[in-house]
Length: 547
Image (tube, rainbow, N blue to C red; front, side, top):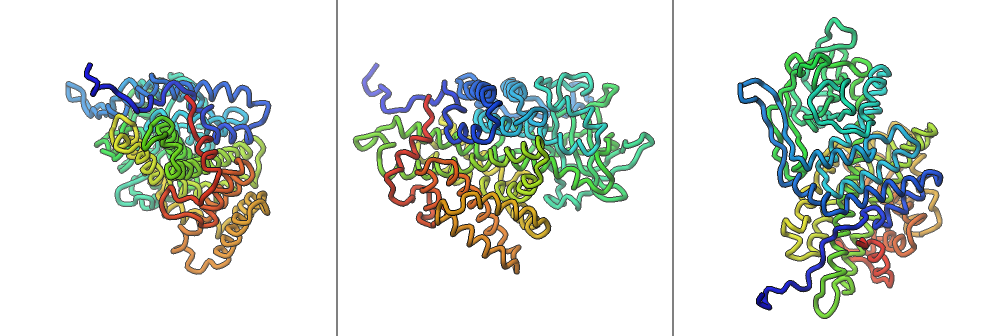
């Protein structure tokens, strides 16, 4: 072989490693929030899932699922309407592994939300698209609990560890997957403007739906939670894909969305025409009923963005640790070290906040903690707003760390970049989250009290954090024209939450640099503009994935 064809100075693939154990920020968060009696079992489970996510086989599943997006088949060869979506086998492999790893079973065991959140963050790094049905299935449980009869019937199916993609009556399957249909083309986030109509049938609790949904997540699911108008107003319904007698419900898939990213997942436009459904909760209280599902999926948006951030940072640091330029490794170059450290700070802050919120869910579920419930009411929309907003610029910068290689599909970075805006749009875009947080501040005093109690645990530990909390209180003291300032206020809420967690729990180098740059203003507008510090190398090394 000619010498000019020798391949040198290329980093090895980041494969064959434990995605969980190599993530110091995540492992530390799990250990501080999980009951010590559960830690050994959780470590074994999460490390096993991490080894799978980091394996060459699973990485290939993710690539194939992304490169072979789902296909819609509206009719069979004879002209019968079937409305089926075909997925690549790799999609089903990813789904099967995610469900067997109990990523839909948080509600069934102690510490389940922290364990499930960590697993979701790990497994989403293999391929983000299939996280949608995992998230919808997990999140449907609290909404279904508005009707104890339906919950008793469906919850064991949704929390099962067995995956069966067959279109068959859910009662005969070992497990079930759920989707959601809320948005309509004329209403968008204003779901009260929906025009889908529900007409009561003779059977108690049964209705016939007529209308459309502009976005229906995971259209091949076994069941869906949807909103439709009754005489009392928007109402929540459970719509099964296949009826008990084995016939298919009227569920006409008009087309699949051609999306920027999230290519492996099917998002559809669907029509209902005499479609059978069961009411969930009271008539006219559909938004209140389904909001429990929305809140849980919003936390998954935070987790999904944290997963994308972590994978992007892992790839960038790994590249820098193996690539030589200008007489040395990139990771040792002062300016590149500054960039990598800045990215690592953002990623760790996102992970710390996401797992803290999962721990709040456990406190509510396991102990009925009302303070934690109040904290979630404000912190979830704030975190969803801020963490998902930070994802895209971080992934773009991380891709640039690989130079031209990061712009090439084989690197995996373009897939991460296309995925990165999704979680900011999903389940309510930025303005919706900011206004929801503002609504909590105005209507629920316990939410602000819980926030101040949480960040107050770090009081006096860092003067920049103390100053940022004081600035936030000044903002909140004047609610005149607050709607126009809602993004500014919610950004501050998210940053002081992140800062308080890092000051309390992260290594001093991480906490100091975060507070200096994010709360003290000692940085520029782009990543890689951290203040001079002898601790940059320590921060980068903490973020390095060891294969």
